Image 1 (spheres, rainbow, N blue to C red):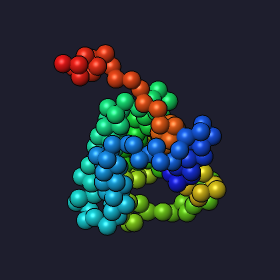
Image 2: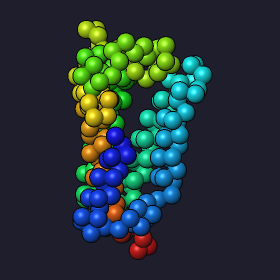
Image 3: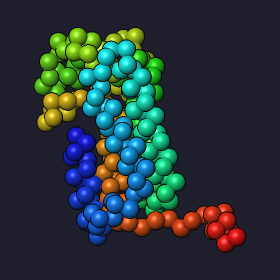
Length: 190
């Protein structure tokens, strides 16, 4: 799904007369933080069980750091809106994972998406997902939306993350940056 969001962002970037090369203007440390967070997410199933929760926390911390670093790079207003959308999605997912010890997943949503209702997350070693039950806190923020074309389920936070990703890529391709604040302009004159 995130690959589709990236493609939509690139298409949107070209529609607003942006250039792909403008993505290279993002600060290098931002891209390093994104790569580290992605590496932790991909390595998650390979890690020993006792390190997985720490890796998940580190991954979410890196995403937060990335958002902060990009925000500090003074992106244009459209990119700031996209970043705020990304931050909202990230926060919703982090919140529901934090209060439940994992992302609650609806069995009925899995069935509606064409998946196997008998999936045992613990047996598969997927510690970041848990069954959504009647005791689940904030169940509505979990993976409760079936996506049949992808045989997947998604959360409200996932949709915000996807929209923010596409919006940020399109805005970054446009390449405009916000002017420095008055405070920064004053400091650079001295």
